[in-house]
Length: 343
Image (cartoon, rainbow, N blue to C red; front, top):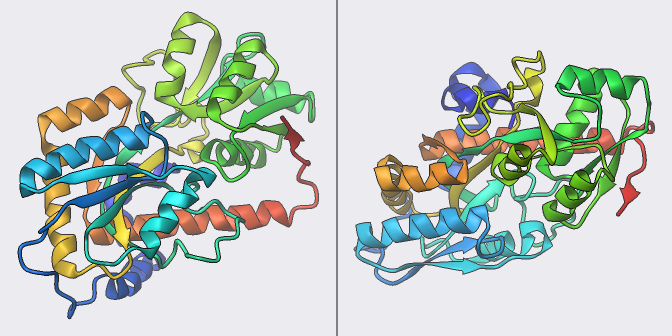
């Protein structure tokens, strides 16, 4: 995520456009006249994970479900509805009744709404209510052990001397690693060739083998390989160096703060959730994120807890989503953008 995530709680004070979005959308997301049934929740609540069991989103959802079940004395259950890069799960939540009994741990914006994709059944800009931000997981820019670079400036210099000869991999156009590498290309005016894969495990396999030269990936997925020497970490996208990779400098330290792009996670529900349901869930989420055991389990995932209330979460999500959609359209309309290689 770009550098605004380091201070996203202040976004509405810094940019008038974001303030306007927050006020406008809050008006339709939290209608003042719509009240929840007394005693919410009166029956089990489903938290959708739009990704498979065992993944980061699933683990976050299950940890929150456990805390909410204890807090509300009612069952909160996780339903894994994976497929189509998250679209199946998000679509199910968008179509659900806005009564607070179907929620989703959103991971976005590029999984919430893959830019350029056709989704006639729901629109991410208007289909969801924001309950609160959970946090972020930074990425690492990593390189094959055989690539003769050790820093981001090294990579830029190496690629600039070899236009189109350095490949980078991602799980497809529109993913966070894809946009991270495309921003690197744009900002540094270098030519890297994109190789699209079915998923991040395949990207890592080919990076370790040296079939591709570089990529970006969430930090928890790369630590073991970096520590073993199978790959090299050139930078992390977090605001400060990470305890798990203390020798790896940040992108900002290397003069490329525009690449400070982390994956964010937020609790959301269908559009037009009753305001008292949102308030109750937001309070419970705030309590969960302050609980030592929850924070410890999230730290094990590499997640940096960064809570924010519904209005600020909504403003941040909308602004971030708009940013990537605009960039996607820019790439689509750029005749010099190289054609992806298939893998």
